[in-house]
Structure formats: structure tokens, C-alpha cells
Image (cartoon, rainbow, N blue to C red):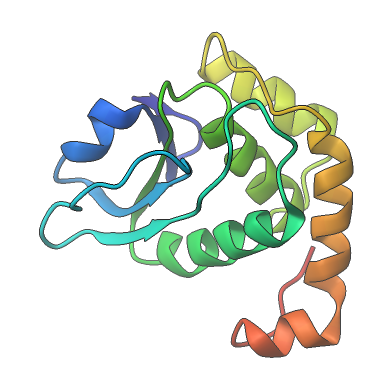
Length: 148
């Protein structure tokens, strides 16, 4: 597992089964896997396809879920290898919720997760995600205003 920020980690499918006692939330960003989350860990599964363009609606669901969980402690985002879908979700969170520029978010994630390979078309998917986050319907459906 790799620490991206103080509150967000990236892991692979093996890390998902035992994220450690300091992880309070686990997001599985993999269409092909289902796991039983560890007891006491908040869990969500977002069915992203490997090597495919990320659906902005799924990214929206993922980043809103992370946003709600980081207040309680560390969140780990996992996929099969912890190099594509999981890092893409974290980049989307950094851009969409934390307001980090795309190039800066990619550089941070690549520096902290060697071998990270964002999904194809991720920058455009994040632009659409940011439009979703800014829409009044998205803010009301996610339980409050989200700032991009």
C-alpha cells in the first residue's frame, strides 16, 4: 500500500482484504472483484473497468464517498494492482474535491505510487466530474454543497 496524502492511501486487491487498523474506509474501484470488507471498516465498491475511460458518474460516486469518509480517518482506494483505477480515483478526488490542478495531482500520485498509470482520458473525465460537482442537482443529491 502507498500513502498518497495523510488521509488517502492506494492499494491492490490483497491490501483490500487487510487494510490495517489505521484505515477507516475502503473503496474498491474494480468491476471484476467483490470482497467482504474487514469488520469496522466503511466499505464501498465502484465498478470501474480496467484500462477503460472512467465514467464521470462513477468517479462522482467515488469522490463523494471518499469526501464523507476522510473526516473519520484514513481511506484506502484499491483495485487489482493498485496502479490504474485506484490512482485515477485518487487523482479525481484531489482535482474534484481538493481543487488541485490535474498535472499537479498526477505528479503527486506518480511520485508516491511508483508505476501509477492513470486511466485513458482521465483528464476529460475529471473535467466532466467537476461539472457534476458544480451542478445544483449533484450538490443536493450528495447531501450538501461540494466545492471543486
